[in-house]
Image (cartoon, rainbow, N blue to C red; front, side, top):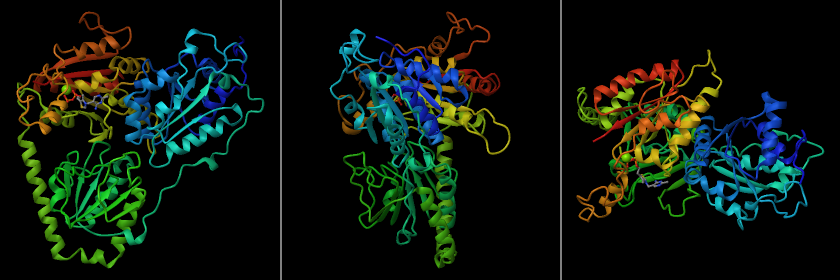
Length: 584
Ligand SMILES: Cc1ncc(C[n+]2csc(CCOP(=O)(O)OP(=O)(O)O)c2C)c(N)n1
Ligand SMILES: [Mg+2]
């Protein structure tokens, strides 16, 4: 068996070359025995063309790799790459694959495949015991139902076309993961005449436009993830300012779509808000779940229109939300059209009428009552125990204005949420968000380090290899502030059970009876320090200069003190910090 040792241009090399040509600059890798040519290619590129070669991030766990990629993709809009090991690495992507698919994060996943020759017939042929054991009958099937495209590189001669086609799918709306495989022998193939693709021919599908007959005026917008395009919130504000009486409900779960401080805001409530019930017209704007049909459906005579890049929720089998009209449209383009149409049309003048202006007065007053009520819940004396209200308040008041919050707090901003349901997303995603923010070239001034704050439930934190992502953070100097909300385990399943069986056995049952308790509690602060590099503290003794600082707080005063130190540590010293908030 001869393995590639020279600087030959192989299919594996073409794979990364194709990614680089397409503008992909980061690869998150968990390598294995299917990857000898991949590893050779990585080294060759690093040595021969370090300036024009993707950056490679070692991820001990695939869930870290895909979650970092996912976070990176949400900020950059481009699909970074994940490299995993055969069928087992594919399965270890776990809930991360669901998250990228449902959360519409464009990611390129490559998995090697077992060699298909047995006795040294080709370079890459079987050489180790496991090569007989890792040949799944249909490896792509494992990923297919979560992917916009699955494909296989069968020859080095069109490897780049396969990569480019996959990237087209990943980057065309609805964006999402794509999965490409290739066997060891193919990856080892030498390409005699390396070539480049003209990227002009490989662009993603462009946005659809809103036909003029779809332009309407009326009072409630429900939106779910229009804020993924960072230009949209401003346009939605412009629309709300133009139409007095228009209210906007952000069903949240993903990126912030509309500022909660705007008078038209109906807040954020995972689709359970009652504002749906007294609206006579609803515009659904990039929204998967506008209401819960069994709980707060709109009245029968409500007119409903749906503007969405994926108005049929293509990936969701049961999704029967009614609408009188649906348009596949890019939300930013559509909002632009609406604002400019209304500004220029006679309707713009009509909106000055006193009847519309009166509605505006009602709007300004009603949310104020709601905000006052929320404010009364916040207990801020130093000795007060911690809860969602005072933790949220202190985070907002203490951390820099520019902080980007990566949120995975289940039962309880720049704000990025998963928009999907596989818990454990934010451990890696926060790191990817931080990387992408710092990689972004500023349009004005010098680059400033970003401040990313991950807020995560203890259950979600535990669900996806926290030690793996904490180690990656320290290894690659990706400092973020992590707030672990330790309420003793999973609370959400208790709530779900209560909704279905309000008088059931769950009433008064202990956490252990329900198998949702994490008692005795892990020490998350110590875990953070232990997971992050060799300079971590030993037995509770903090070593000066250690990269990660883990602290536990149980009251408003101590949280305030620790948050006060966070900016200096993260922004000035460039070091990580985890605050474990003990919630009774
Ligand atoms: C991979 C995965 N496993 C299980 C679940 C089901 N689930 C949803 S929320 C939740 C509890 C999360 O716990 P935590 O983050 O501590 O939030 P809390 O419920 O305490 O507010 C669980 C188990 C899931 N969504 N994804
Ligand atoms: Mg919890």
